[in-house]
Length: 277
Length: 337
Image (cartoon, rainbow over all chains, first blue to last red; front, top):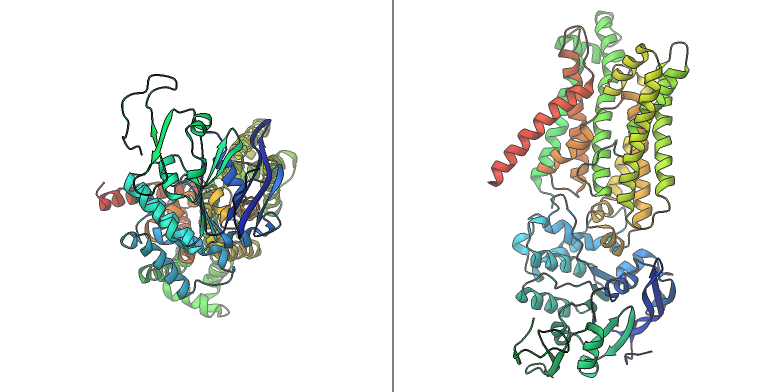
């Protein structure tokens, strides 16, 4: 089983399996998340990225195996205890009945508040500070629904910040966003000071942002480690079914993927060196 | 964020309710002058106000209070169900509560031979609505994923099933019972007495208290089940408790006043235009506005036709929809859409 070297393990996953009906969506997954790391979860559509995250944020109970947070089985912890340590940013955006940005962000206080407590002034300041940090102070009273995609995502990250998590989990936080916001969202997540695990569609963005990558293929963990160590043309061909060329990125020095925009085994188009994503 | 403007809205609602209670006590088939009204209220033992005091204390006061409780309760359950199902079209009867109540009443009328008392009608209605609720819980208990969707579908199915059973029974019973059940289904406060007020008041206060305590969790449900779960909320259990609570309150109200539509659906939306959702003020304003609205509906139902009363359900629907359409129009103009 691939293991990430780490002195302080935040999350360790062992033998994790989960099935939907007869279909095995996650098959015997095991890895560790070091404290303070930024981990990217990559894999083709249907590889099990979202399901793995759902198991990690305690929405799905594994059929087999276990997940431990700082040595404690997460299903032995109370839901509220776990919510004080982890925060999640999801894509799900149902109609919110005109809920304001401020209201949405202050939902992050819930795990830290008792039922009878009214919201303290320090909490309100925390909410405002988080909104300011994601640059939405001017939209504080706007309806969440009226925000653009990037602004919504930033508001949800502000909600996660208010939760003061040790681990932030994000399910494809940058899909549907402009390049500018993709970079902005990732920078925000990095500056949060928590460990982060996020699933990605954009492999180059994942490589640039993450210390570690977990590569899923058909429910199995096929590679885990630092991007420079694991990203190979063979891996990308196996896990994603694409034909690529790996070069060194001029800035961060990590691998940089150039895709051949034809089908695999076809004559590569002459588009070498063109950046993608 | 709660602003001082929203506190003013609440105060205005409370003031309006106080004035409306006085109006409701003095208006009706026999109109009371203000001196008669205050005499009856303050010196009820004084023989000079004997007749007025009887009208005020025995007839109109319980009726006024029941209208307030019913309006507030229905508006609050509407808000609760719209929130926990994330469905803006949810209303207190969403899960077939009123079909169950009608079924209970019709079954009682069909089976009984003599005169049916109000109390037994209420009991039959309440049993019918609880039967539907229990069936719904049994059906959706096994569902792990997409609880809301299965509940909505099961609720609609149960609602149709019990409507069909009711129609079938009505088809076989005598025409007299049909008109009685029709009037009952359209809602009325005429049967109100002091002894009817305790239970709905208790249910309303309990619901209100729990909703205020759990207001943050309720708001979090709007983000979706998954997001709410990541905030440490046991979504399934929480939703079930809220559903049982709202069903009991609705069941009690339906059994006392019949099926009064529209209030539970529209009042939460109307309040949302003025007070942002999620705060304790929005909960209180919703209940207060529901009560205020119902009070005036009842007054109109008494005054609209000489010597007879309209069923309140007709007035709520007619008045409410026009009012809501006006509000929608104004709001759109304001936003420049």
